[in-house]
Image (cartoon, rainbow, N blue to C red; front, side, top):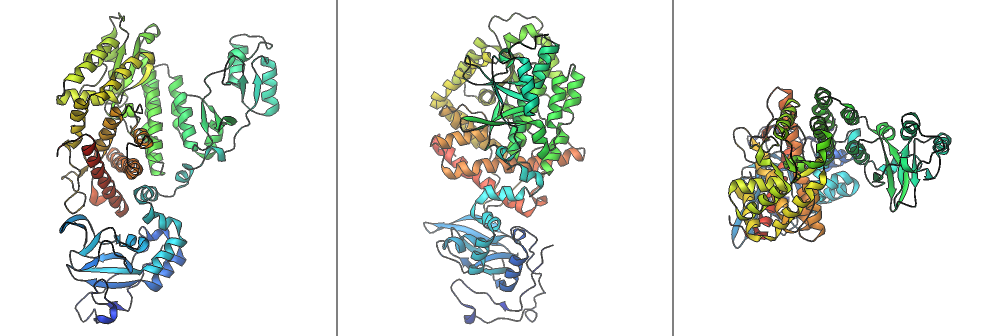
Length: 635
């Protein structure tokens, strides 16, 4: 365990910025009536990022100083001779503009401040004691040398919210795996055969090269296809083809692939989403190998693919329910092991899509599949779901559909989801409601209605629909609906009313910059997630950004020059902080037999998590202002 630095023998009386210790006397702390105080705890972030040598260097140089209430310690625009770590008391950070002070944040025991003034040579804010305070002082030259010698320690201060989030996630082996590139895995060679090769020749190639798939080139197709050992076996045993039959017709297209720069977890998500066991690996414009489940599982043991396989084989609602029952357990395992939130969301989205699509296929007769398109909406539509939450789905029907059993079947669909842990939507956004079952023409009429009606309910329905994603049936039916939705981005009056909803919930920060909440805690959905998600949704609609996922919308807006670089960097990390903290609370609630909610109890969080949450909410506050300016919204 890292040591706790002892209190230095040399204690200095209060010293204003710019004054030297020789100008002020050094009191005897015991005769002054002060109790002995503990030393600097090096087991806490960010000092736990240093090794024993770094701790020893601190031990030899750290000092302590008493500051009375109201003392200015650092002035904005000026350097600092020390970085400060608060032992007791509270420090106020503020900005000065036009002879007015604007509070920025306050800092308490264990917090570090003044680092930027040491690193950059000028402070971004002014710092003043709010109460009598004791602080540890780290000399500027020592602090700068520690930054130079310990990259992770430097990253904590240099790279802001993004890096702090990674540090808070921990350093488990699985967390390290989340940055392992596909190109670093043991890939199987990409063996290629021509489409006119026989099944017998292909089988011999599989045996000789010790691979379980072949890429098939065909002049009739610009991209290669793929055949696996299972494809050849089924062709012989089930289709009773001759061993001399060509393999061209057996090739599967399109070829699902990942890039060498992708992480292994992304390959797992792709295999789960497409219910396949092998993907091609691309580097630039060429295929450099293939990656199968065996290679992935050699690095990462997860039950996600087992869930996917069980769903593919499920022939009843009971079997689907059995397969889906393991999802919360999977989320708990992955969350505890430090998997990145964005990857978790992708995996959950892929599995939820499989569950809902499989239920649809079991309940809807195959002859009706071509006339229906099942949509998921809300967080599920954006691919940002974690634990099972309320149903948000809808249906697009062919204009000529004539099926008397439609309502009965959709009732059964919603009831099946409820039995599997997806409770009914309180707002009734479900396919068992006629309001959310519309023909293509009906959807166009509804969208025209949204263009004219700016009431609260209409705006809510439109917001939900903007995140819609097709997952089963004839997905082509959704194309004209999506095109009609995109035209709403040309209506500035509608956009103004839609964006106004972002201001309905205030950012839960106090005047002094601390996180505030109700008796139940801080509502991260209202105060954090919704403003970011909805603001990005409105900006994406205005600029015809097709991405549904908030992370992808953010990236697309920045790439198009429509979002400042600092917001494009910090918004995804802020969202990840909100989702990670909320997921932790929800899993704890399930463990305790309570109904999960969106609240976190700030006082129960780790110090670094509290700091992350505070930083994330500041990002939301800045983004709210950006949206307010973009859409000319009032307060």
